[in-house]
Amino acid sequence: MTEKKEIVKRGYDKIAKEYQADRHIFDNKRELEEFVSLLPWNAKVLDIGCGAAVPFIKFLVEYGCSVTGIDFSKSMLKLAKRNVPEAKFIKQDVTRLGLKANSFDGLTSSYCIIHIPREKHSSLFQSFHRILKPEGVMLISMGYSEWEGTDKYYGVNMFWSHYSPEKSLQTIENAGFQTVWDEITECGGERPYWILARNKK
Ligand SMILES: C[S@@+](CC[C@H](N)C(=O)[O-])C[C@H]1O[C@@H](n2cnc3c(N)ncnc32)[C@H](O)[C@@H]1O
Image (cartoon, rainbow, N blue to C red; front, side, top):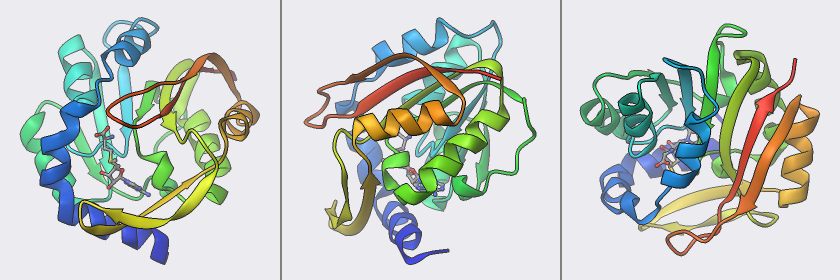
């Protein structure tokens, strides 16, 4: 694993409990409601960089989805399994997804892709395109500005990497997605860039 990914993994292993305690600051109900409104009933959903599984996986399971969460932080996954035992969890680097093609109706990823080195974003979205069924729905958050670097976060070193919203959207559309809507929101003192898109095959 590269040093950048190690910083992120090590960081979340250390701060998982503090992150979970503050997670309610970011309210993503509106985005989640719009996402599920486009899914078939009993949809199979993959959550990328699931963290402690709240609020995303909890919301999706309560809605009736069958959910798989993926994360490489063992501390985050420990919390996730306790928070939503009904979901399935996989410990894995999400840039190395080996899941079957056309196997999910929906894919979510909140506040995770901003930690993945941006030169990997294009291949990451291509893997999402492969895993999702035709017309599958994707809800993701990206960075609101172009930046890459490390900084202190909850007292540990953390790494972030993102392109401008324009470049992120282009990368997603180039991978085979059609945008339903995209918006920079103000939420908990941060400005995530949300994209809801459909898989075109
Ligand atoms: C800011 S947290 C967000 C967690 C959750 N999605 C949420 O909304 O609360 C970012 C999560 O992404 C995970 N993550 C970052 N890069 C990853 C990678 N390459 N593979 C797997 N998980 C990754 C981290 O371990 C962490 O749990």
